[in-house]
Image 1 (cartoon, helix red, strand yellow):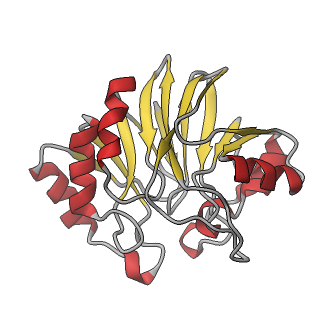
Image 2 (tube, helix red, strand yellow):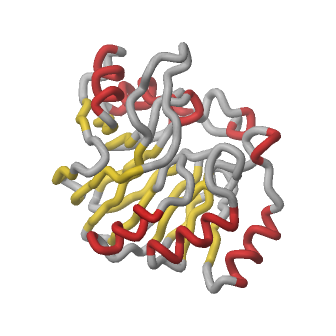
Length: 226
């Protein structure tokens, strides 16, 4: 599967003949100033929770592409009210058959609110089964034993996990998460954007390698294949 990283927790995956974008925070991210959201072409946008650093560019990119926005019931109603015409609800524990494959909402241990402080529903992650492979994006979360349930539903080819610590899992817990998930290939997200989540990339890659895992940290705008 082709993966393109757009900074922070925003990345896209081409699977099942469609391009799926996650948690778009680009125009508000100084590190992603070389990326123009208007140049991004996608079919779906999955939003893990309401925090600004995961939802800032949802409306713009969705309307530019007539892309379907998928998220919790609260995000579904919120983005519909913001003028997004193509929205679909998916709460943790639920699944839906899309034209690219099956997506399932998963539990995440994290807070969720809109920029004005109002309630944005529960945070979640997403697991996917597609003809090109299976993968999991945890969203912002702590390490949780709920992750051990995901490989019972799908044998994963890779997982996208936060590694910045403070607000989410750090490197050590992400390694444990990968073991629970049964994956050896991990896309690291949610790091470096803010001062308190900066990491030593070389040390992170080595820590994963020492555990028999591969940590992918592509440059912003770079595409890789897993």
